[in-house]
Structure formats: structure tokens, C-alpha cells
Image (cartoon, rainbow, N blue to C red):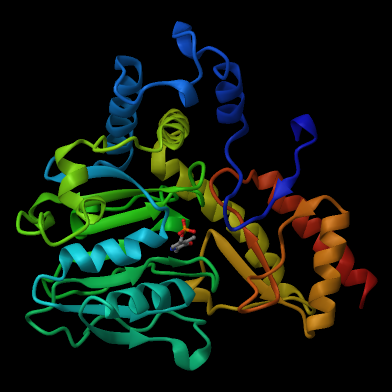
Length: 362
Ligand SMILES: *Cc1c(COP(=O)(O)O)cnc(C)c1O
């Protein structure tokens, strides 16, 4: 690792590709002859408009987003989307949610403030250690959408097969798996991701929404910022957007395109995760928290037999130069988040360290 940087296993904000950070540093004082930093630039300037247009074109290419979807950059991070989704999409006032962990629970709590929520499947019975069967969900005909958190960051679960929504639009929170593997956008009504997990700086979400879900009848019903139509009509420039985040995310989109796109990312991420899971599967000290079929390639929670030992391992990893391996406070244990930008060498070094720790404490 250059610059004395650390292998940072944080769930978010998380590592960004070194090459991207170097480019940003090089453009910091004078962005391409504009005489200013992107942070200092008018969002109405031609130079910023180009940054925005390119970011949109690049993510469209990366995800192969069909023309009938809008790409929106909205502030308020991930959490604002828990509210915006029901406020905009609950036309009939009924939505179905699949409950798989902390982030889907938060989404459910916010949706309940807006309308009727049917929890159509849940893995709460086994501490969110698996993805429930979603092949034949009881979805009312008048449901406005079916909501999933496609990768539960805290519990380390991911969907390897999407639910059968019986024709009802699927809404997916992809925050912690955004751009980690190919996804067929046409399978969804709306995909969104807070960008600080797998892409760039915190404070913004990318929302990819099918045009027919953007409503014309909400102008005098919703706060203007909360209406998807506001952002769609103004091309994400209704007010001053998070210019800096758009710029940094745009750089990451280009980096991903240059490095083989999402197919290549998926392959890398599978190989990387296998290094850690193979170790956990044979370890007598560390145990993975999730059933094999539903394990996340991005967030890997694991435990030792005791809380005291969990804490001891966290402290030992920190002393050895690995950062942020403590599990989320709601579940304890340890968690390694290994997003796109975590190099395979980082995971290999961690496994080597954990393996040595295990031998020393046998
Ligand atoms: C982090 C996260 C969020 C919330 O993002 P904020 O930007 O902190 O509001 C929502 N969903 C998932 C899956 C997340 O990992």
C-alpha cells in the first residue's frame, strides 16, 4: 500500500480505488484548466455540466440502463430514500417489504409512516442469517411495489436470486453492493444506492427509476425536494447538487469501465470473498454468521466463541494495521467489508493474520 494507507475494512464510508484518489488529488487545485477546484465550481457552469453528463452516461453504460429509466443524483444519503420511496410510489397506499435485517427494518419503519406495509417474508426468526424464500410471496394485487434490501450490510446477506414479484415493480436498496456485479435493470422498477459504500463520498444516493413510476400528481402534495419528478425534470440540478460526490463517483464509473466493467468486478469480488470464506469454513475459532447460499460478497460478518475474544481479535487486527473490523454495534462480533476497492492482497493479508492468531490461541 502506498502513502502509508491502511487496509480499511469499514462498511462505509469505505475504500476508494487508489488510482481515482490520485487523479482527484492531481485535479484538486485546478480542474483541467478551469482555474478552480470542483468544490469551488458553479453547478450551472459548462464545465460542471460536462462532469454531470459524463457521470450519467458512464453509469448508464456500466449498468446497461435502458432508455426508459431516469438516473438521479439525490442528496440525503441512503436514509432519505427510505422516505422518498413510499412517499412517491405508494399510489394505492400499500407496499410489500421483505425483512432481512437492520436496513430493511429501517425502510419498513419509514414506509409505515406513509401507508400500509405488508411484510411478505422475513428471516427475523433466525437472526437474519438467511434470505427467506421469495418464490411465491403473498402479494396483494393492489400493492404498489415490493421492496428488498438486496445486500444487508450489517448482517452480511445477499440475494442471489430476485423475488418473484408477480408483476408488481421491484424496488431494491443496492447501497452496499452497488456496481459490484452485473444486474439486469429491467427487472426492477427502482434501484437505489447510497454511494459511500462501494463508490464515493457520503451524502448522496443514485436513484435509477423507471419513468412510468414518476408521478405527475404529487407537485402540491410533497415537499419539493422529496418528489422524484423535481429531480427528473431538472436533471438532478433543481438545486445545488452534491457536486463533489458526483465528480468523485464519475471518476469511479470511469475506473470501473476501464477495468472490465461489472463482469470483471463480479469475478474479482467472488475470488476475493472466497479467500475469506474458505478460511472461515475451515477455521475452528472463527465462524461465519450467514448460511452459505446467501452470503454477501461485500460484507462478511463472523464471530469467535466469546464477546471477549471478539474484542481481543478486533484490537489485535487494529494493532497490525487492519482497520474497522468491529461488527456493527447491533450484532457484535467482527465484520470485514470488502467492496470493489479492497484489493485481494488486503483480504489475503487479513486471512494470514487471522490464521496466525488462531494458531497462537489454540
Ligand atoms: C449504509 C446503508 C444505508 C444508509 O445510508 P446513509 O447514507 O448512511 O443514510 C441504507 N441501506 C443500506 C443497505 C446501507 O448499507
